[in-house]
Length: 251
Image 1 (cartoon, helix red, strand yellow):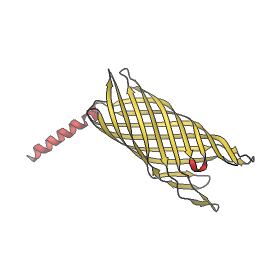
Image 2 (image 1 turned 60 degrees about the vertical axis):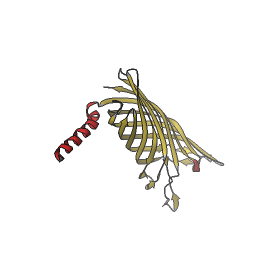
Image 3 (image 1 turned 90 degrees about the vertical axis):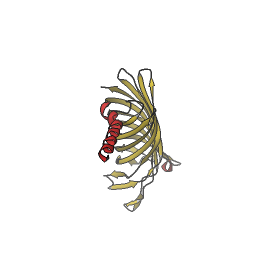
Image 4 (image 1 turned 180 degrees about the horizontal axis):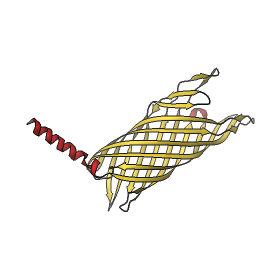
């Protein structure tokens, strides 16, 4: 009897996991996003466009019911306008972003609706170009490096559009154990992750082409201060917003 129950459980588990094995798809992607970085306490505003390419595999658009997965990875790059102002000073330059991101998602779906959990890891550099302040003083270039693991928890809805497939997801994002380094300043800071939100709409046509529209915010908390040359230095609280479109091709 125990053996029979075990076999039934194995068959039920295999039935749930079958879509993960049988319906895997492979995609390449290319896209662009409007990106913003703001720090309210320093009146810093960065705004510009970043470009990305990536690869994706998984079963997330397989069918209306089951357990599905998706793994995607991309790299991105872009130059962003940098503006920081105070009542007596204005600094304008460029910030060059370069980074990579990988995410793994699991979704449990019943009758088109699903709950999705995602673990992600993002690494990027942020190089602020040299500039001059109002007094003509040269501010040297500086390059910061960030490492950011994060989790997402979202609600999704899968649907058909004639012979095509689509899915909407909205949810919560929380970074954790964020680190910031700057080799020139011998700087190593630990940042807190704060709550933020995201959404994504993905459309996959039957002729292999698709599009992904998304908006994603990231909220980084203020780090503790450390002393460099007898001066307290920290990373102020910051928020980023990315609003983008990605075009995909399915093999």
